Image (tube, rainbow, N blue to C red; front, side, top):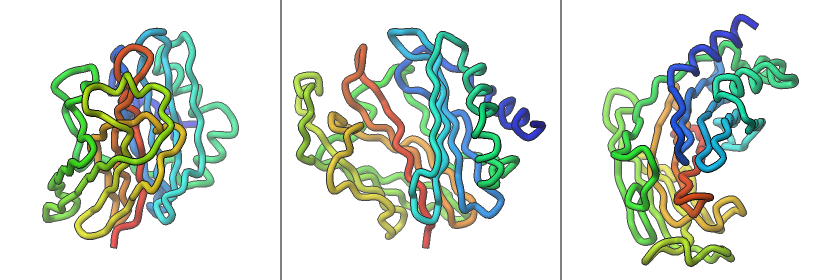
Length: 231
């Protein structure tokens, strides 16, 4: 419980704002770096409800191993605590070596000009962005490429002028760690993407990309987490 308390208190340093870009509070690697956990929380725009999300990924396969989410009329801090202390989460995190694990200091963390998401924050179809990030001792190029993909998006009229459903690929140096061949159901209306955060431990990485699409009031900027082992 002491480790869970430490984890939760560390996550409270980011105060949630009422917007549609729910922030990442903490990234934590297991002692072997084989697993990575990401904790996010904030306040939903529109409803004003607090929301918190906990996800665990394998850095070997990129697969999501565990996921819990809670939305309620409560403060984000309270919801984070509930997520971390409600069974089976404590036992699961312990089995994955994530309590205590190693809290990550992001190697790159984008600062947005506005608290609310804008279409201009992301890249659209046919656009590529390269961000040099000092993963180790030297800057390494991370390339985000965005391209159109077929999608039965029911809200095409809300995508904005010139926008269409898109997917993305992500390349670290010369290694492609993610490439959409089709759009999953939760991104069928995603039209733009931005590189937001990069966390690394040894040769294991978690990259946070934001997917921009129509939401309840204005844009949603939904996080997409890519876990990988770098060569």
